[in-house]
Length: 157
Image (cartoon, rainbow, N blue to C red):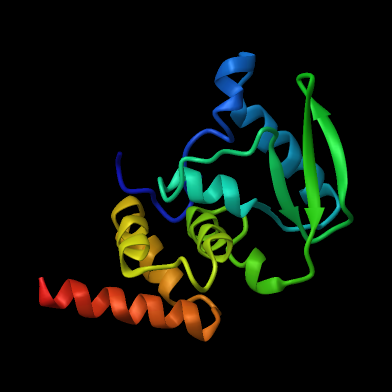
């Protein structure tokens, strides 16, 4: 797996795409077009984001995205894509970027499951510039602590 740059979007939208024989990028692009037309931010749901960074093996059965606009479903290539409203601007930081997907994964894992190991896995997957951008994100104290703990463990070698 190569390091993802700040503007790269990690992995296919879902393993579901392979089974249904459609281009997962088409789903993301169409949903992103709708969001852009409506002036909305759009981000991968945390469960899918965590799977992309190999932090979990569970995968959503259908594509789900966080949106700053109204909740709704759209159909693309015969597949239902759920766009779920969130008013939490922290969850939508860096929307549509690898950095934002990483942040979404961390939010999904939650306070009790974000570990120095999960932070290290994300660091390995992201381009160094994207990881630095992630470190600068507006995040809760528990997430900041996980980054500090990961840095300490990394320094110890």
